[in-house]
Length: 236
Image (cartoon, rainbow, N blue to C red; front, top):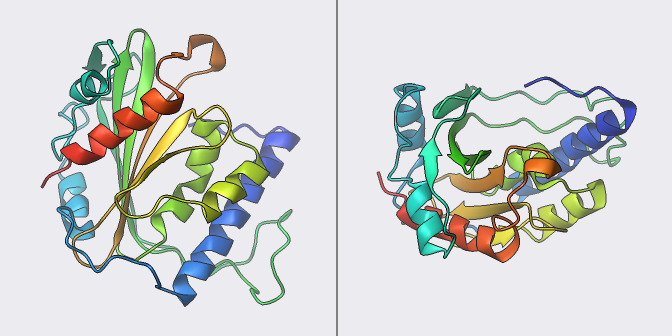
């Protein structure tokens, strides 16, 4: 992914990093309201599956965007892959220790550094809907209550939300079993999936395109319904 280094975008990215750090710090101090478990997927299973995935393979865990769109009342076919993107991609992180805040971010006095981030397992499935690339992103972490925080820069970019809207979403984020649209035009939707055992999992659906190619019927409430259907498909 090529970084956009224009000053306004740079400031927005740093603000997103700061918001993620603040939320991670809050989650590390409190586990109130977190589910005890009982989901179908665990962090360990998502990671082990991601380690063995091929870029040309099918989307794992039973995810089928075409079926989800149909169930949500969206009459559009979806085919795996896109012209310049693989059907399946993965990103496995080993965690990052606490580190200084990025320049341009003003941290609270009580947090001298950005909190450590846990290991992650990220699976991206890309589909072509019409002529538009659409992403399904599944992120699993072995810590409770931090997956949405780690997704904030992604949510900001693909949801096309401002810094204040991003902070709003970080506070009013979906609980386990809930699916919510990003603020504004609802260009991305985030489902929080109850994890089996300790951990946190999110599923995000968004269009990977600019406004000129954006599908109007895959935003707002139709997008939320499709994301909800996708989350319901998940199984080991």
